[in-house]
Length: 577
Image 1 (spheres, rainbow, N blue to C red):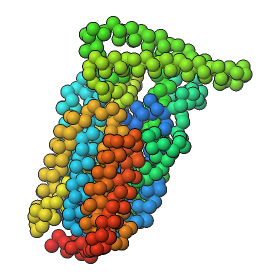
Image 2 (image 1 turned 135 degrees about the horizontal axis):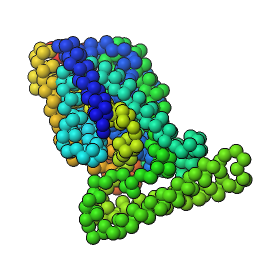
Image 3 (image 1 turned 90 degrees about the vertical axis):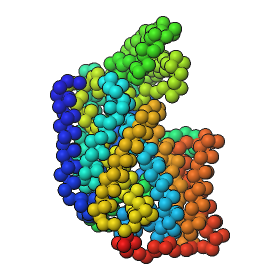
Image 4 (image 1 turned 30 degrees about the vertical axis):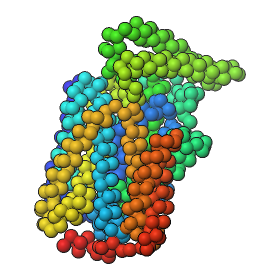
């Protein structure tokens, strides 16, 4: 990176931290600190919702997914629009009328305090761990690419975010998210343009994408109904629906977003904004990955994008074998490059009949050869280092950025990675602090205190969870595809928590005992299915929700049916008194 790139990153960090400091002057009251006095416009809330989702994992992980697997990952989001519509009609007006700070407050009104506490603790555990993965994603990659110390890189993401979130509360988080979305989308668009301009003069964008399509990169739909296949139309529509309903309807990090809106209609508008724009935005992210695949058809990249272990391999007894694979890869790349050019030329007007089919088969054959060499190199690295989880998916995009982009654009993309990470981290920390203070500290430890006290405790809670997430990040650095890692982690909890809310909202005779036992049963069922079957993580959300609902209903009927929670019908203000 040149000085101009560092300047761009520095300006971005100053801009965001200044936003937090400015908003910190308006957060003396608890409702202001946690919910911005329920005064934010729908478009700002909507952008904040999208920014929270579009983490650095998305930038470095999903682009890597696009490079390796093409557009198939987009199926993950097929259930999202339907989930947003359902939530807009159900939980949004319910939570807004309930005048609550957290989604889990409602569970005590409907059931009892133990159900609220258990669900809140599950949220705190899962969200804190996921935040660690969010911090790890950009930290480990940038530390490798630039040779930075991993711990210091983690703190570079964590400390500024902790600072402005502590100071400004949810208002700082939301308005910083708005600015960060501009940086993120601008960075992605710039990367896409740079990739297109990096194509050879005689290869059109259409021909390049058809070349990628020859090896399945443009295949976005798979209608196979197979619970052992991760991304299919059905896993995305059904499993993704349950995951999205749980994340946006039951997870405090998202519920808190639309509780800050001015009205029910504006809260609905913020969710529907994601419903209509999330999939196109994800297509852009994945297309950057596909374009990187095309770019590296004509511009030779390294045999493996993650070179952390290269010195160890080169000093091992298998150094000559690796060097031979490197030479084999160079030759395979040249063969594939010629085949790719031939395929692009065969698609031009006036090309001989049958030429396109032959060129396509030759390209597929040569691409397979390249992948086989890479697979051999990966296996060799795993054998030499003893690291069975070695994976270079998350290093493709950063390698392209640092080695092929011009000065200035590098700084913009690095700033976008910072923006994507910080927007998600800030939202998670704010929600963790809210649940910690409202569901645990105020409810069980100190029920009577003024707002100033609770705001102070909230700031300390933000600091605690921020440092905890940074600690987790040091252990989450090597988890394969990080975009999958965070969703797999969430799927252990999301479906079961959704099942509790289904009981609360849709089963009239459900009671606290049923919800509590059902939640334990759901978590146990998810663990068993994951450990003893080939079911992929998206379906775990369905398993958890169904088991909690069924078991919770049966236990409720056996224990006397519905009972009102001790605070049923009381307002948040009455319960706080």
